[in-house]
Length: 195
Figure: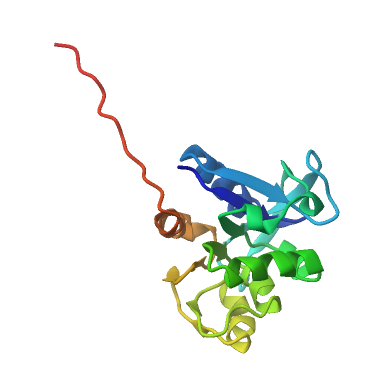
């Protein structure tokens, strides 16, 4: 059975970290509602593409317009089975919204699955839910995570209800861990062969 997953996104969230999980989770049968504070379903957020080209930090270019399919003030976190928080620059400002903090706290209070990567843990740190977790993030966010009480690890980590990755290159392992945590059963029917 598919799960109902809430995804919190915002302007200049990382393009691949929004688009890939949004589509991949739906592809295997989950329902994903993407929301952003102060925006309604049908409106868009602008994404950013972060690339690693040997500089001391990532390069940022304009990505796509990503259409929201739900409205933040019209949802109840209790109606969702899991939470996904992509990275990019969006978490920097999303963590200032009370409704975002309240939603994140709900998932931790109820011990529901949560997946985040890159700068997404900035929101979790602001929600004061990281105490005692072993986790990862984009390395530049490590200090915030550790200040919030977690033990930072260099690699994809699953600890209890939380799955974390460092950036979009971690998608395969990060999504696999999240799908396992969700109890997702993916089976492949063998192709029928003609005699």
